Amino acid sequence: MEKLKLRARLEEVQVQGSSIRVAATVRLSGSDGSMPDGLGVRARRRKAEEAVDFEVAFQDLTPHSGALAVSASHAGLERGVWDVFVVVRFPEEEKEIRVGAERARSIEPEGTSNLSEDPEPHERVLAYFTKVSGNLALDCGTVLHRNLGAARVVGLTLDENSRAVLLVRTPGEPAQTDEYFGHLEGISHHAGRHLLPMVRLGDRLIGLRLPLTPETVGATLRVTAALGGPAEPLDIGTTEYWPARAAGFGLTRTEDGAASVTPAPRRLGGLSTEPSPAVAQLLPARAKSSTSRATKGRRGASAAVGRIPGALAVARCVQRGVKGLLK
Image (cartoon, rainbow, N blue to C red; front, side, top):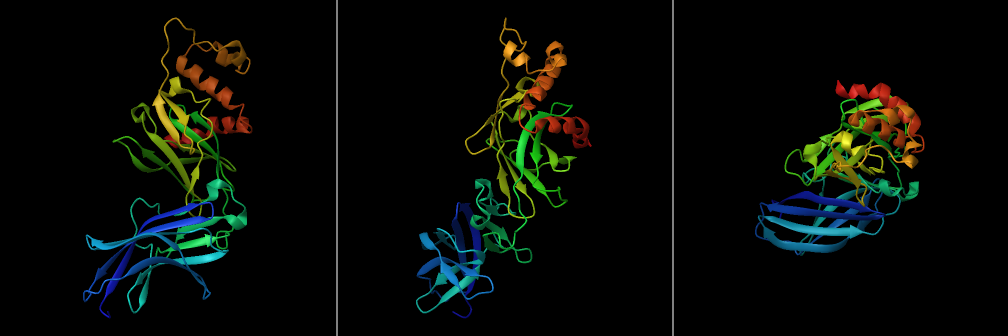
């Protein structure tokens, strides 16, 4: 047993409300043939003697490709910082393995949290990876991450080259360490995680250029923000005013706040592209008289976006600052 070496790999970590779910695999080497009779997941409160075992939902003690597997969850840890271990139980002893340094590529390096649910500060749960070793830790009640705030999407627009720009209100002054990612799924090309180019438009306003073109029709885009802590999803917000004809593709918000890329609506023969009287009252005079379909789409969309609270200032900032995305 002394020569036995154990290595754990984190396969999944999920946070929903106060509930935490962890899945991992374990590889054994140098064994004398002894096999464990149980696996588990345990959290230890940092700088304390307290330990809490998760409820095991699944375990596989038959080594497939040399790996055992376990999945466990906990309904809610008390406030504090907890380090996470995989427990390997043998008939006469048990061993704890720190988990997280080795993890599945599907796990975002910024971790995960329940911040998108807008919980009270004492109900926030952040699963993150420690800076030195990269192991999984849980900050329950924002003991360490006290200054985290949530970014909010305030609109969608086009830059001067008809490229999609997401307008985001940040919780504070944008920092150099802030990162925003776009996750494209559902298409074979350009799929994956994209670091989104960012331009500062105001004290707490930024523009993010999205990796969307007519070629990405059929894809789904999720946006996440890593602002000094675990990544949190950004709800794409309303797509009602998205200028689909000018962009060459449509956008539809999904139930979980992502954006589905759809074909641009076709212009039907014999139908006027002039706005209806009700819409025309909302548009500036120059947008009503524009003869360029692309220009009309952009100006009309800008006017409509202006109906969103606080978006008038956003529109002016975009006009001045979005050129930085082209550099």
